[in-house]
Length: 529
Image (cartoon, rainbow, N blue to C red; front, side, top):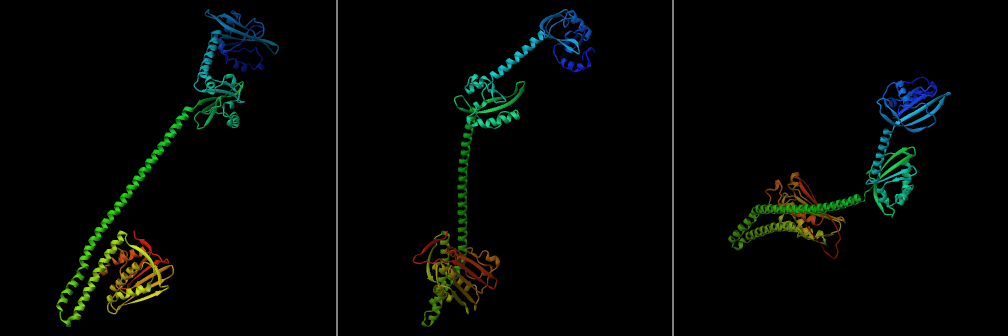
């Protein structure tokens, strides 16, 4: 701080006063009016007088009669004075006379007119820049006070909203909002005034403004705030986003159409893939069937060459021997060989019938004809038919419980029982019994065939109902390996469930259970697919 004299009383708190004066951009000084002595000058004043000594500064002021012998209160005038270089300086001069503790002082200040003019020019330039920014901005700018009254609005906003300036100044900002938002906006405005903060544009809020003709348009609004001696103010920057909204809607529409197109194409592709997969599956099924058919033919040829050889040889040899027995006394021998021929022909017929049955099953041509019939009577006929196949000491025991009338396909049931009976006799030793039991339980019919034969292993039981399958211990016993396959398929056609319980050398038991439906006066057709 510039050197100060002690003429002023300490109670004057000169240090505080001097700190304030040091901030002034021009010359500030204080004289003692009693002796005219300069007691204070600020740093800017010392630079203005081109000196660092207060006594020299006082000399310059005295020589120019500045700040001394001046009278009046609050005098302001333009003066000229000569600096140390002999240059004339123009200034504005102001002074103030005051007393403190019965002592008179003169406070004076000088401002260089050039600096003032430059300052004013700077202010005018800034005002022009502000005006250009405010009036020629390409978005609406509105300034409102704490009461929400519009105090400033730029030309762009006036054009956007369709008002004249005098129609909006002093009006509430809610006038520019759709009526349905007025009450809610007042609450938002009050909360913002309590806790003002800058809010940038593009924060995801859907806002709408209204023109003087009542039409609405979407906007984005950015807010800022400031205070001055007149109070608090809010600046709103308003951007009309109608074109952007339309572009966004168009993009959204295109996206929706694109998504729909992708979804349609995906659906078409999925259907094409499904059809391709279906065709693949159908092809695989066809190939599987073709492979099975090939295996069937191969097994048929192999089996036929083996199974047909024995009965054909028997027929050939017996026919040759019949010719040899021409005498009447040879009739018993002729009859024996004729019976062998008949049995061999029947065997060949059964083998061919099995193949025909398998073929019809594979082609889905077996039809189920349900009807009511007496099951014990039919089984009695079947037992009589197998008597010629019984070995020495073998016999069949039959037992039925419940109502003798059942509703099933009698032809298919006959094939099932005959296959099981023939197998039981074939695989059982002489002097053994075959047990056949049937039961009508009202809602189900059960069939059980039990023998005391060679049985089968657990491994063989897993393949029991496959075509051409024969157990490892049945290789030397005549058979096609188709009987049980046919039994299982015929049982399925009538919704039956077949099970097998067997043990090597201890016999085998087959059990089939059929659900029953009473049939009266009509036949029910079904086919196996």
